[in-house]
Image: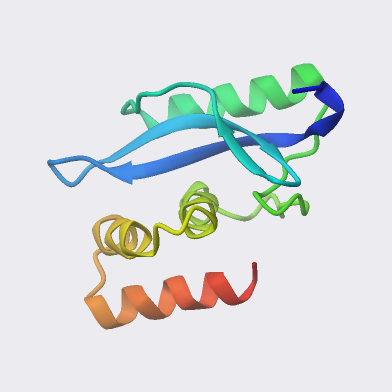
Length: 119
């Protein structure tokens, strides 16, 4: 993949067996995301710091999976939910929202729907 195709560095999230989120980094392009590893790990703050470091190193503006700029106020959780939705992992996104924000199913589905409308 040529560097010119990269629009940003992303973080994918999935729930672990114990309900804690697990992370892996991705390269973002206009065509979607490409995982940088085949495994997930704990430590969301480490992944966020590493993503910022790589972005700064290759001088990329932080971007979401659609290639649009992400407002610096967007949370890592929102970026993870968007990534899951673009991968067709709607149920995983709802599960992550329920676990991360301690919401009931109805409110978690509404939160995911709201983010999906903005994609």
